[in-house]
Length: 462
Image (cartoon, rainbow, N blue to C red; front, top):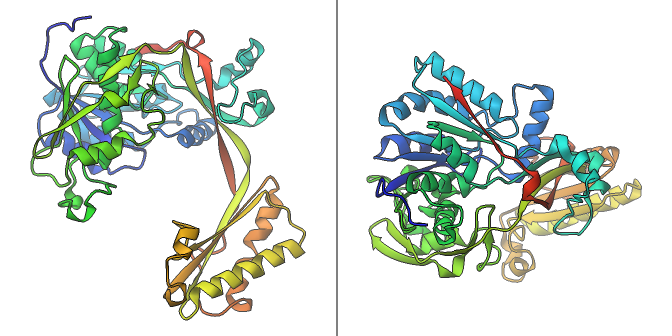
């Protein structure tokens, strides 16, 4: 399909790469230069179960609460500058999130000036029994096990929706689009679909928009943050500029950042982000298309500007991915710090003592994992073979246990502190005090037929 005539370039800025990202980033994106859309990505797999627990305790919660103070700060600017927002901050309760944003807008005197689009339909938790009864086994993609084996422990279940419901909300003149679990890439692709009139079978164009979304979904990770290539020479990370996409109707786009900001946008840095969670490079599967990452062409088009072209795509599959979280058991992690001399050997001896005491108590654990931070926690045996371990000035002993038995985990937490006085010498820190047992939320990836998931788009008038 030939894109309809319209705005030749659409500027989509990344404002959040995860729930907990830099709170100044969205404001800096809105005020640092011209943009048309602000994309804010909040959700990770484990986040959904946390939000579901919040909602079970309070039906008005279940969304990313960080979104509200940001909207209070940004809404007047968004209205005057005519910037639209796409955000998956709705979590498992997009309607409640939208209601809270609407109330914020009214309090700011913006009644009649803001339309909020709400995308729902991804939350399958209340439908699970019916889906299982109709033969949708929701088999674990990693293990092949059917979901009914853990059905009684499921905490959340959300299908990944694509960009089209968001584009539909934008088509209905939504200024802020709030969703639940949609793909990270869909938050960027939707504005491009809307602005350029791309059709549902324009596979190359949809793949290009998907690549654009994948590149900026992690915020500053593609503009200098968490970058391995020449990381010491990246300028002014304290003032890092978050990335933005300058998209064109033909599917080409440039990655850039606002002038006067820190960080760096280069082919090498963008390439690092592209391989993040990529999987098969010839088949990056989303609900909207299948993108072939081997067709991506990157070109340094100027200082802090990378041009992306050549992206090819294939038809979307007939399935949606479902992210399911379920209760697995309990865990606890305890730490002690040992000082020179012989820091590493002292930590090793303490680990042996601790394990012996746990065994003598007859405690059963599914796993006991020990790391010696400062010696091998990052690189394991490779580090132990390359370091002068006897010269290490300090080593942190970090021991974690996992068990379905909460009592066993609780007893483990009481066996750490005694080592301070009845174990090897020179403990210099007992980080955080006695550890507490924590519930384990396990991840269950599955697929479901697209036809049984029905996205819904609503408009909330402020």
